[in-house]
Image (cartoon, rainbow, N blue to C red; front, side, top):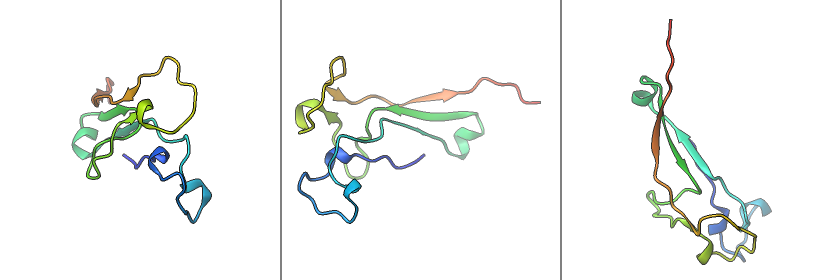
Length: 93
Protein backbone atom coordinates (compact mmCIF):
# COMPACT_ATOMS: atom_id res chain seq x y z
CA UNK A 1 0.00 0.00 0.00
CA UNK A 2 0.90 3.63 -0.08
CA UNK A 3 -0.09 6.97 1.32
CA UNK A 4 -2.59 8.98 -0.70
CA UNK A 5 -2.80 12.75 -0.70
CA UNK A 6 -5.94 14.76 0.05
CA UNK A 7 -5.03 18.25 -1.18
CA UNK A 8 -8.67 19.28 -0.73
CA UNK A 9 -8.13 19.13 3.07
CA UNK A 10 -5.24 21.62 3.14
CA UNK A 11 -6.11 25.16 4.30
CA UNK A 12 -6.82 27.61 1.46
CA UNK A 13 -4.48 30.26 2.88
CA UNK A 14 -1.81 27.95 4.34
CA UNK A 15 1.92 28.56 4.13
CA UNK A 16 3.88 25.74 2.53
CA UNK A 17 7.55 25.01 1.82
CA UNK A 18 6.53 23.92 -1.65
CA UNK A 19 3.54 25.49 -3.45
CA UNK A 20 2.40 22.03 -4.60
CA UNK A 21 1.73 21.08 -0.97
CA UNK A 22 -1.15 23.57 -0.63
CA UNK A 23 -4.87 23.39 -1.25
CA UNK A 24 -5.85 22.29 -4.73
CA UNK A 25 -8.31 20.24 -6.70
CA UNK A 26 -6.09 17.20 -6.72
CA UNK A 27 -5.62 13.91 -4.94
CA UNK A 28 -5.39 10.18 -5.27
CA UNK A 29 -8.62 8.38 -6.11
CA UNK A 30 -7.89 4.75 -5.31
CA UNK A 31 -5.85 2.43 -3.12
CA UNK A 32 -4.49 -1.05 -3.73
CA UNK A 33 -2.45 -2.84 -1.09
CA UNK A 34 -1.42 -6.24 0.14
CA UNK A 35 0.48 -7.88 2.97
CA UNK A 36 2.27 -11.18 3.46
CA UNK A 37 -0.90 -13.13 4.29
CA UNK A 38 -2.85 -11.77 1.31
CA UNK A 39 0.12 -12.02 -1.05
CA UNK A 40 0.47 -15.76 -0.36
CA UNK A 41 -3.15 -16.21 -1.51
CA UNK A 42 -2.67 -13.93 -4.56
CA UNK A 43 -4.99 -11.33 -2.99
CA UNK A 44 -4.96 -7.59 -2.46
CA UNK A 45 -7.31 -4.98 -0.97
CA UNK A 46 -8.89 -2.28 -3.12
CA UNK A 47 -10.83 0.88 -2.27
CA UNK A 48 -12.02 3.57 -4.67
CA UNK A 49 -12.22 7.29 -4.05
CA UNK A 50 -10.08 9.65 -1.98
CA UNK A 51 -8.89 8.14 1.30
CA UNK A 52 -11.06 8.62 4.42
CA UNK A 53 -11.12 7.40 8.02
CA UNK A 54 -7.90 6.04 9.48
CA UNK A 55 -6.13 7.27 12.62
CA UNK A 56 -6.85 10.92 11.67
CA UNK A 57 -10.54 10.14 11.04
CA UNK A 58 -10.48 11.97 7.69
CA UNK A 59 -13.95 12.76 6.35
CA UNK A 60 -15.02 11.27 3.01
CA UNK A 61 -14.73 13.74 0.14
CA UNK A 62 -18.06 15.53 -0.39
CA UNK A 63 -18.98 18.02 -3.09
CA UNK A 64 -21.30 19.65 -0.51
CA UNK A 65 -18.42 20.41 1.89
CA UNK A 66 -15.65 21.57 -0.44
CA UNK A 67 -14.66 24.97 -1.80
CA UNK A 68 -13.42 23.34 -5.02
CA UNK A 69 -15.21 24.91 -7.95
CA UNK A 70 -15.24 22.22 -10.63
CA UNK A 71 -17.79 20.50 -12.81
CA UNK A 72 -18.75 17.12 -11.37
CA UNK A 73 -21.79 16.06 -13.38
CA UNK A 74 -22.54 12.36 -12.89
CA UNK A 75 -20.26 11.97 -9.88
CA UNK A 76 -21.53 10.93 -6.44
CA UNK A 77 -21.93 13.76 -3.92
CA UNK A 78 -20.09 11.80 -1.20
CA UNK A 79 -17.12 9.63 -2.17
CA UNK A 80 -17.36 6.89 0.46
CA UNK A 81 -16.88 3.44 -1.01
CA UNK A 82 -16.32 0.12 0.74
CA UNK A 83 -13.12 -1.83 0.30
CA UNK A 84 -13.05 -5.29 -1.25
CA UNK A 85 -10.56 -8.08 -1.84
CA UNK A 86 -9.35 -9.21 -5.26
CA UNK A 87 -8.02 -12.74 -5.74
CA UNK A 88 -6.02 -13.49 -8.87
CA UNK A 89 -6.95 -16.74 -10.58
CA UNK A 90 -3.75 -18.28 -11.92
CA UNK A 91 -1.93 -21.57 -12.07
CA UNK A 92 1.68 -21.61 -10.97
CA UNK A 93 3.97 -24.32 -12.29
